[in-house]
Length: 430
Image (cartoon, rainbow, N blue to C red; front, top):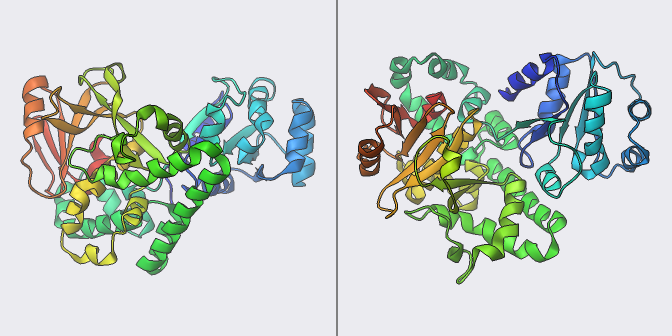
């Protein structure tokens, strides 16, 4: 399957002063496949090393961090000669050997000719726990589940993607039912690569659900295996509360929904763990939609989304029959799936910081506001074609934004400073 992240990796490869690259992302979003595929298409040779349960690598990196000795050890272990100009070095599950992470500093400073990409499912946790490697000596790339356009490509609908990318919305509107059908599938299947691949091969909804349940089970096992023992129950309770949080009319996260009387302080570690794993996206409220948005962040108010809309639909037991009920799917769970979908696509757009806005009384809310570095853009999310939006109107009158976006099941339309963007085209916002 084509991943747009390959283009970013190609850009990294041709940089003159590139540093070792770390790919961050939740378990099963396709990090290992991406690294191997990049090695296959862009390099003469690839040396792939997994550090998971690898005592030889633990021993190799624990002795000292002499680059010449380590490269010799990597050659002996892999049985391949490493030519820096022609070989891609892949370190997978690198957080399992902290000294290997530390070595990236020395590769960057003393042996910059070597081209290294690293990844690890629980890398965020390792970094947060203070595993030693200096900031500034590595580069990062965030990998998420397949976006909707990547899903379309995987389903053999590349021409539909080209229409959107060219901005040919007249033609896209002509075929909008095909886009809507694919969007329904995406709400159910989501973007986890294994689920998408299975669905593209045989269109078996039951098999997709089995795969998603296996992924969710693997996440639960990670909780037990890797999280501090005393925090595990809270991680589970917080994780399992997310669907209920998203089905509320006001989607602001409420700790009392986890357990009556629950307090933020009790769940700080659990929240941090889920965030570091890449399993949840925290979207904070801003008190004012001004640049930079981060300066107006309200750390106490936030919405919480999961890593993938397909996993959310599995968690809430969305049935296959719902797909057949016209556009009812998009209204399910008070638009929770739609808001999850939009946030998931926004995360894949480069250079965007995502927040939401409410007025002080909470009587008006903009689902998302994004900071693209040049201006603040409010985004109103509508699950259907009903475009009445009091909050957006109030926001426009108060702040007079240069551009507002309303995304829904309605057709594309540009009027003055308002862009009506179909849900299936939200990635074309920037």
